[in-house]
Image (cartoon, rainbow, N blue to C red; front, side, top):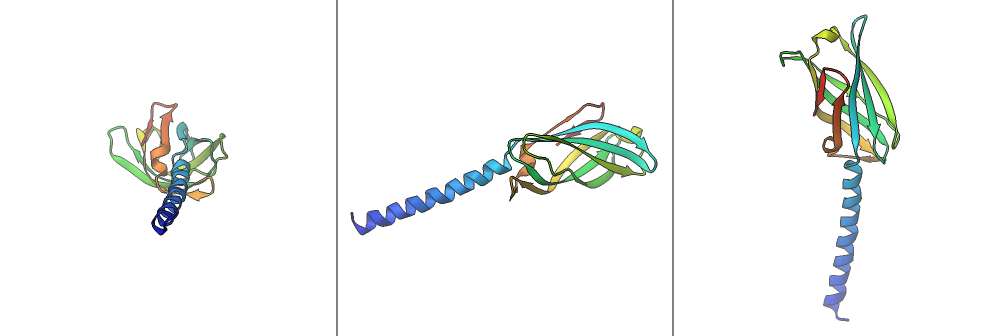
Length: 144
């Protein structure tokens, strides 16, 4: 075997190793993740919002959402950073937060405007937003 074919083989092996690592990282970032708007409850000081977070086959270790609440006419009411993690692999967890100073009746829809931080399966996931599916059990829509 000549020097050229040894170098080519080494380069091919190195490239394959790098690609397999990248594929593993992409798979972790693309694990299914469902967010459900489950309940709005009027409480002293505002509206308590209950989100159900359902992790796919890998655990969601960190999930911080950029969430925007709109009134029924589509005007922005509030923008919040919401801690929605952790959630174990294949499990559902309820995460509640308070929309201070807002009545639940004033909320017409909610938008997952982005993902501030996301770690899935122990690794930082840079494209976590793509793997999120949203739904709502209420007349108030949750979209992304």
